[in-house]
Image 1 (cartoon, rainbow, N blue to C red):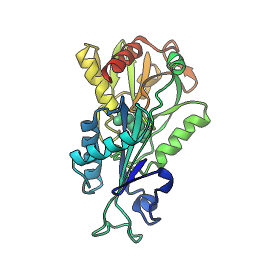
Image 2 (cartoon, rainbow, N blue to C red):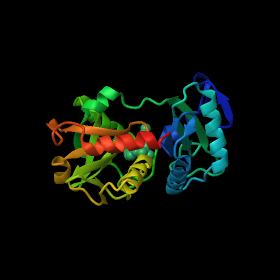
Image 3 (tube, rainbow, N blue to C red):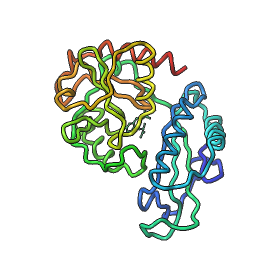
Length: 276
Ligand code: PDD
């Protein structure tokens, strides 16, 4: 069952008008929230980021946090898996096509759930391949906007190259992945790019840095140059659906010794314990 504008229904029955501004302009924002053992993970943080995205596009939040919590819990309850991936989506609603904001229009609110398919053990054992590409997105990547065409094209470049993700470089520095945050390890120090308008402030990213703090893992939050990415000891990818993954090949070359490293192993174990 999904939730759409006040009603729960099977996804096959869900309909939105073609004039929805999400469809016409990509005028909306979204969240992806992992659910472990039927409990949304880091819900408060996801709702705070949703508010940041809504503020960024000047759209009033249609629900209070308590209302969101209740709607999300109902969608979780309606779906059979214990581990789920919640997708929440708000658009500026349905109006005659005009770029300017419409007046007096209710936003479209959609929530669905899919089974949470975290990376299989075999993939974690070998690590994934990534490519690099120029980050050609806009300058508000901190907004989790549904207009994802650049991300779609950048991710497809990786798939076409037989890789899993595209690591994005902007003016000589790494920003993030097409749909993930990226960490680099050098000299046994975890390096994280600073949160700013060039990347999505990842919820998993925050968890990783909190774990690093709690377990005295040395880390630095600072700009990471293309050279530092290309000569990294380890590269790690994080997202709500991928959790923490090792990137062991970059542009066809091995990262470090080409195997998942000690930093990955430690953070992966800590994350698995923490999420439950
Ligand atoms: N994407 N950066 C981008 C561009 C992303 O799309 C995502 C997540 C992240 C990681 O953020 P978080 O740890 O909060 O999931 C970083 C989601 C999973 C998606 O679009 O499906």
